[in-house]
Length: 266
Image (tube, rainbow, N blue to C red; front, side, top):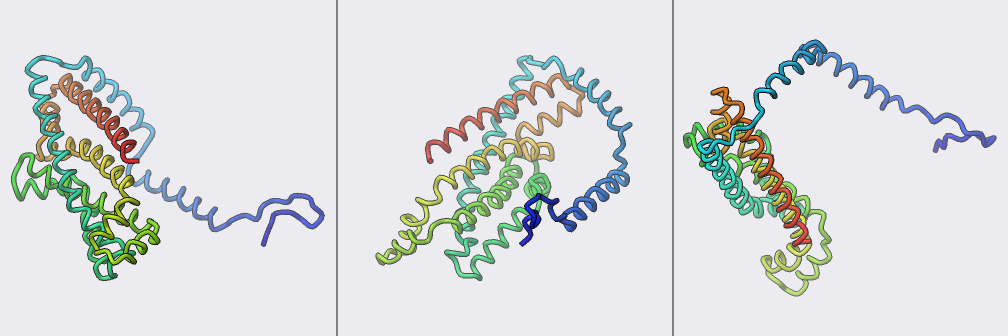
């Protein structure tokens, strides 16, 4: 084994790791090539800063007119409802799918089915899924809820399956040794070990769904995203700023609630 120290005791240079160096060089060359093909230039960036400054100037000050606030509050309420419903239903579906995908609990053919379902749910961005559901069920909150349910299943089921695979199987085997049924093994041997992490995953997914409910609304999935897109199309930029501030406030409140929820179940 190379230690980087000569026989005489004087320290010598470390042996260069040429595969790693070549990998970094190749990455740097590709970054330069990609920037050239995508027309990423410094001049465009500087011009973009000037245009961005003009846009920010048009956003301020926010518009807090009564009619605007009423319209915004209706959109925010719908977005919160979309996020909560999608998270709740997604959790209900994610639990059995996650258990199916856990290779230390399910037979190989069952775990493969579960992992295929998870992979399908994670294959597309929620906005793409929302577009598909908008075409299927029409504009409105239902399309947004269905899209975020698919996203929630993919995220929560994957992390839940990994948490189950990482748990201590000795506790599960001890419960099995008592002659307990599969459901009792799950309740007494599995749930106590993964409950805190599962609550953390669910709380994070609720945060994510609150943000994604804005995006799916832009493509017709209901919520505050539709209000934001309409205001932007009308060049009503001061109202756009009001909506953005409200979204930031909602996300911050959700972050505080999620942190409290994780502490309760730790």
